[in-house]
Image 1 (cartoon, rainbow, N blue to C red):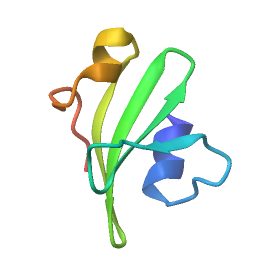
Image 2 (image 1 turned 90 degrees about the vertical axis):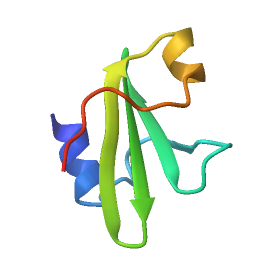
Image 3 (image 1 turned 45 degrees about the horizontal axis):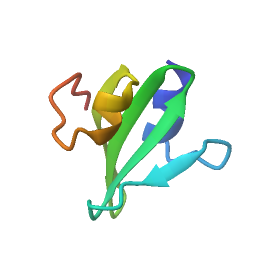
Image 4 (image 1 turned 120 degrees about the vertical axis):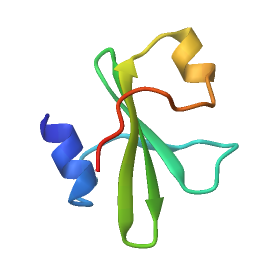
Length: 69
């Protein structure tokens, strides 16, 4: 997935990144119906979740899906 590669390479200028309002260093990006939630702390980036977006996943504050490192 090209978007994941861009996030992990910190090449996010072309992506519509949103900071999660209730989280310190957690961000989200949506591509079509796929949502990606990731943690960016200092120079470390970790993908927390990749899932199909819906109202439920947008409101969910836990991150149980795919974990990549």
